[in-house]
Structures are given as C-alpha cells and as structure tokens.
Amino acid sequence: MVNRCSISFRQITFFGFLLVVVILAIALINAMYQVEKLSSDVQASVQDTARTIEVAWIITTQSVGIERAAAQYWLSRDNSQLMRYANQRRPFGIAASRLLNSSSNPAVLEKVELLLKYEEMLYRTLLQTKNEVSHRALPELELRLAEHATVILHAVIQQTTTDSVAIKERTDQANRLLLWQAIALIPFAILVASSFSIFISRSLSSLGLEIRRLGGGQFDNAIKVGGPRDIQNLGERLEWLRTRLQANELHKIRFVQNMSHELKTPLTSIREGIELLNDRIPGELSEAQLEVVEILQTNSLLLQKQLEDMLTLNMLRVQENSSTKGSFDLALLISDAIDNHAIGIKKKELKLITELESVRVSGESYQLATIIENLISNAIKFSMHYGTLKVTSRTIGDKAAVDIEDEGPGIDPAEISMIFEPFFKGSRQVTDTVGGSGLGLAIARYYAELHDGEIFVIESEVGTHIRLMLSAE
Image 1: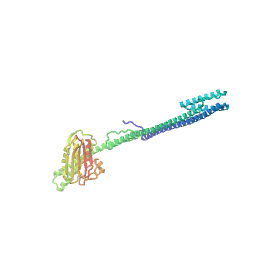
Image 2: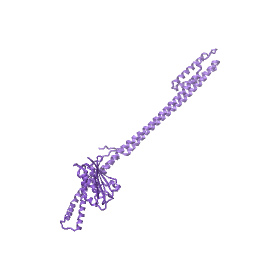
Image 3: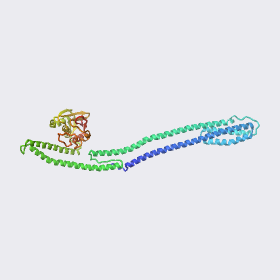
Image 4: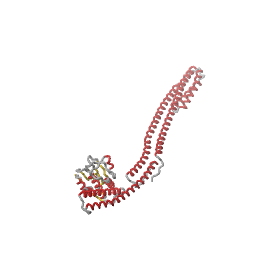
C-alpha cells in the first residue's frame, strides 16, 4: 500500500525555495551581525585609543609644567610659582584619574600610580620647605616627572599598537568565519537541492516505469506510485487506464480466439474440397483447372498458417514460461528447419552456406524449433533468386549465437526497431513473394524472451543479418 501524500509539486517547490531563502537570510543576518559587532568594537577601540592618547599627552604636558614650576619655586621661593604649581595640579590629577579609569593595561596603570606618587611627594616637599631660607637641592627622582609621563605616553602608544594588531586579528577571524560560512552554504545548498531532486526524480522514475509497463502490455500488476499528490493522481489515472486496457486485451484475445476457431471450420471444408479436386474424386481436370486448384491449395495453406500464427501470438500474450523443458542441440534444430524449407530454397535456387557448431541449449522444443523455423523462413522469403543464404551457430562467451544472413532488399534503418512488432511489414518487400501476416518475427521474439534470449538486427552492407542469442548450457 502506497502512503498517501498530501504535498503537491507546487508546495514542494515553494518549501524548497523557502528553505533556501531562510538559510540565506540566516547567513545574511549573521554576516550583518558580525560586521556590525566588529564595526562597533573597532569604533569604540578607536575612540578609547584617541581619548587615552589625548589624556596621556595632557599628563605629559602638565608634568612638564609642574616640573618647571617646582624648579622655579625651589630656586626663587616665589609664592606665585607655588600657586602656579597648585593650579596645574588639578587638571593633572583629573587627567591621571581619567587615564586610570580608561586604561586596562596593568603596566600603564602602575606607571600612572607611580607618577601620582612622585608628584604627591614633590608637592609635600615644596610645602614643607615653604618657609625655609636655605636652598638645598630637590631630590633627583622628584624632578623627573616629565620623564615618567613620557614613559606613560610611550606605554599608551604601545598599547594602541597592540590593540590595533588585536583588531586586525579579529577582522581576519571575522573574514575567515564569513568565508567558511559561505563555503559551508554551498554543499548545504547542493544537499538541499539534491534531496528535492531525488525525491521528485524517484517519483517520476516510478511513474515512467509504470508507463513503460503499460506500453509493454503488462497489465497484470496494479499500478502504485508514491510521491507528491500530483504524481499520485497521475498514478491513479494510470491504474484506471490499466484496468481498461486489461479488459480490452482480454476482449481482444477472446475475439481472436473465437474468430480463429470460427474461420477454421469453413477453411477446413475448403481445404477438403480442394483435396478432393486435387485427387480428381469429382472427375478428371484439365491443366488449367489443375493450376487453379494448385493456387487455391497454396493460398489455403497460407491462410491456415496465418490463422495458426494469430492463435499462437494470442496465447503468447498470456503465457509465461514453458513447464516442459529439455536440452537440445542447436545444430540439429537448424538442420531440421533447413530440411523443412528445402523446397523454398530450391525454388529460389539459393546458395546455402551452413557453419554449424554443436551448442546445447535448454528450453521447450516446439518453441525453440519455431524460432529457428520463422527466422529461416523469413530469410528465404526475402532472399533474391540465385542469392546466398548463410546460417551459422557458435558459442560467444556463455551464450549460443545463431546468425542468419540473406542477400535480400534489407531493412530500412528507420524500421529496425519495429520489425519485431506484430503485424508490421517493412517497406522493402520482394515482389514475387506472397505477403505474410507480419507475425513470424514477433512470435520468434516472444519465444526467445520466454527463454531469456534476444533477437536483434546486425548492420549489414547487403541484405539482412539477424542474430539469435540464447543461454548455452
């Protein structure tokens, strides 16, 4: 039982398109998020770097001014210089506090704290010596505020360089991430497309297989097609068509059987009457009358053969495999078939060439003999007078091959695929031969397929070359 699917081709296409759009949208949103985050981080880093460098420069400038004011006060004891120093301490402290709050570099923080410590020591020293008259020298360490501030500026600049390198690494990492994301999307998109393609192609392949079965006349098995709702609807219509074709096939088989049997009765009477005339039971016949009787006898036999072929073909449509099988030598079957057609070969004065290798095959004797008989009969029928008929049998691998070659008009290349169809007659006919029913090759092919064999045409420059392939023992 095939599960019922409620999804149509249109819905599958829409879902596939939606899935691809969602994937691309997620990738785009992620890329935008990564770029936006990186841009924000870079902008913030640039602003912090600018502020930090600015503050460090302010600290350096203030340190130089403080150091100069301290030195001038120490030498002159001018209170105005001390006031100038005191005025410069406030922006110096604010700048140092800003640097302490904005920088996360331990080395910079340590140097700023040490600078504040030295400045505090310098200021206290100046206050303690405010009323002194002696001019002792200031400690050398306390007069190196500008040098310490310059060290801080260099440390900040170095930190900025390090941050720039880190930002570049993050940018490269983001680029690699986006690149790998794009690369990963390609096989994923291929996988999604392949999944939808496989799902749809399997449904179409199943549908095509069922159509080929119908075209091949296989009406016994119910049609079951899975997949989208559209394909299942087509499968249901094919199932309806199968049942109709199966019913029509049965009606046709019964009709052919009934008509063949109905025609056999008057044909038998006609043949019996012809035999009576041929045996001169009603009386002696003239030469002209005997010729008419011979024509009637020949055509009655042809009509009987055509009726038998129709019945045989009709039975083959419902036959599977023969239940009675044996082992036979193809060379003997071919020899018997040639003997049965000796009159036809003699009538056309054909040059017969036989190269028969003893090859044994397994199958049903009547069917195997019919295959050979029909192929040889067809070759004789289409051979020209005084032409050559070549029949060979040999082993090719694990197969038995029978080749029959004539020098007749050949087969139109456009008709090669149709010559094994029932009732088909090629456009290249022999004018002095009575037309057949077009069933001989079809019956031969049916019997060959029942023996897991095949019959096909081999390209030939002159006439027709047909090969029969059967499994050799």
